[in-house]
Image (cartoon, rainbow, N blue to C red):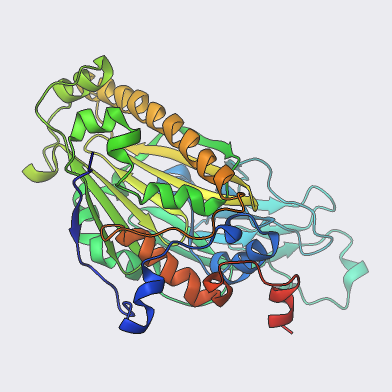
Length: 400
């Protein structure tokens, strides 16, 4: 039984040379999927310089609306300013480090007031009020505004970055921006709320599985009924892509068959995208599911070497048609089943990576996304080239 995968060679700059070809044909080693010190290295070298999605502009429509993100032990808040501009800050008072804003989202009015000592900040982060001001006669308020983080809005979605340099989200998504532009992402609104699902796996196992087209024929019978064996896979720069078009043969499964039958026409999409499902994975840990009827993001956030939170939500264009409401529900039913299948798969892999019999595995010619990901991890953390764990303290010593 062979899965037919259409492979397109979209190799980014820095493609493997003859000297690295053998390495490129191997998976990353198992030890880095369960090692606390490697996760420490990833926090500093992979995640702190990476862009992380927080919300959509439609989640913070008014001045004073905010959304928060818990990431790497930090809580970041994105607040819509009086001028309509979203800004990102560490959710920490500059006086005694109290948390300022509670919950995953809310509205703080025209200012941010610390619940501990009532230090007050404007929506653009300036410190504008300190009770008992005479106690701080030596202090320059201008130097104690909220600590800001980098923020970028890409097609309506708000991203933050804790530190570092590197390309913008727009630059990273550029190879596929013309495709995403067709879906009017800027006009979308949330469908439901953010959900958090914990998985007993390393965060890389989530992303590896998401970029793997070879397992679909074996492990996802529903997707195979919907798309046959014609999944495409591609890796270009910072983004991996998979896609499949709905087949005309009615599925034997009721939810899938009804989705095929009732998926309505989406006028602004070109013919080749009206019945196409596309998946885009942005380095290092964000996945976008793009359907004719909705758009989802899925974000894998590490909690420990073997525990990950998957953060996800769907967004849609306003559409009152009964057929559209129905297929969005059917989409959820279909993908909920796929999610449970993937949960079982990645837990199997995580368990197997603890075996002393496994170090690395061979990669097939079509596994271009896994190769691209492995290349980038090895470039950032050279110890990922080792099949076995180096001695304790390797990352700390390398940073002395």
